[in-house]
Length: 90
Length: 454
Image (cartoon, rainbow over all chains, first blue to last red; front, side, top):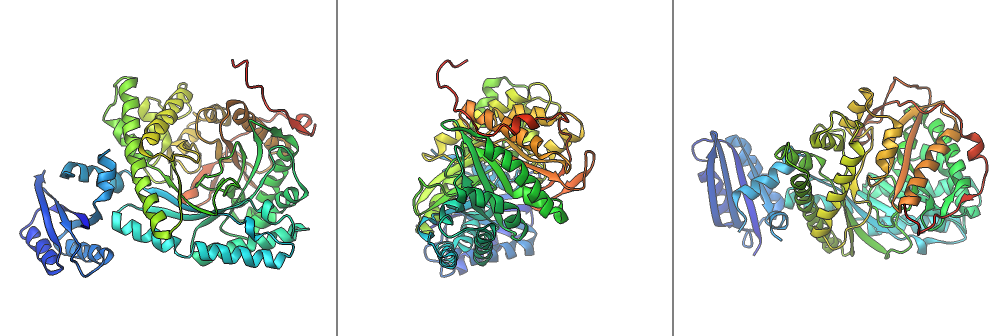
């Protein structure tokens, strides 16, 4: 499994999750877990996804998600899960 | 499973606190490039570097994108050139052709620095070593990406004072030949004692003779992350302070370990070491001096600075060794002046002098680094500064280094601008009294005794 973490941070607005999830569905990226909070009016979401089935490579997916983020005025990042595991788990 | 707070913590370190992998440095042995024919040597060197490091930059960029962590520099370190060029180089100009080849190879593969235009002369100089050292000013003047280092002492061998004297002159000549660019050549030239074979950081990086044919070493940084973590424990006792630094150093090193393993796997080259060094940059919030201030000093250089730095250096190492089984290089805290806004402020406030910096080098991981001094400083005085620093390294069994820049045409009170990661620096006053008779004695200082420690 190729697990990646997608984070979305920015001003809350209608349809953020919908837009991101539509993109993921269209690109055969499976969502394993979602957590989301609003901190001081800021939308803060983390998704654990599996990209094994995705036809595109990770660099392209990152770039496209970043563009979607720009359209809705939030910052979207897509990172390999290992960077978080390494840092926070012994 | 990883939770949202942990993810946010990591991303905050990267976005707001300047956490980055400072360098992926590929060490390449050039020992097999030696030949009696200079042209053949140059061809072999160019071919070996460009084939081994062909994918270094692109691999670094791929890892950067996938993990979302900036990898600021991709670099190469090579076998000290005096060992490779010995048979072929009969003149200074011969060595300069190798320098040009290295520069061309670095540009071809897209790395920003290549380190190892070096000689190891801690006990004595061969004719080849001396030729290489004498070629440094010209080599630095006609290339852009070469870093040069000369090892003039070690705890086991003592200090080669002939080489120390020569290096005072070489630093001056390098400054003179690069004076159009504020003597920039000296920013890429370092004199070392007890130099490690596997250091990924410039300007002192070279690929030691104890190393494999090629190796991946990674340097991680993150003074901003440590500073931010310490803000949360302001006023707490030393136990809490140390614990916080260790935990932060652990996290930072783990990122380096991940990047190193990944780079090693993708390039098919064995992983060497992680160098966890708090290496500042001129960027706001990326300063070691600011950590010292957060520990409780008004400015770096105030009384207590040496103790605070000793503590910081030690905790960084303790956190780092837990995170990777192969910690090496220089690991610790760097205290360059021009590359650290907090240090520059301290110099401008007259809180920090060269003498205090010298004391700090007894407990930091390197030495007198990126210090601009007046261009008319006598060469014997520079040799004296080098000798002092080498003695600290020799006696304390640690790496020490001197990277000073006598800025030709400028004096105390003026500022010099190197640009980029090298930053800018106010020119610092140097003790005006002479050490010429001391430096001119010639010979070497014997290795220190290893018992009777006090």
